Image (cartoon, rainbow, N blue to C red):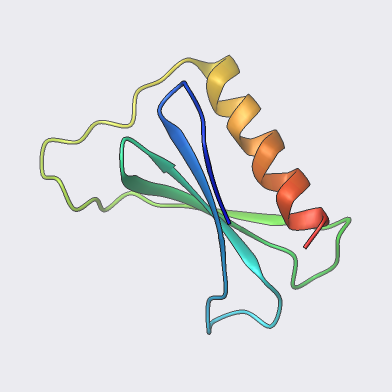
Length: 81
């Protein structure tokens, strides 16, 4: 499942072999910036923030409200997976 947001964020549900449960990746302008997982339970969702990007000049700068909206969407997708 892929959800593309008008703000430039993309939410992707996928299986990562590092985790037992399904995970959700958050991208901004095609760069992976975060990954959420629910291995410790639905009430203890963890987020991993990434600092190494494919594009050398990529700068993860965006409106806080848009980022929070993307995280809420990612959390909802993860909870319903």
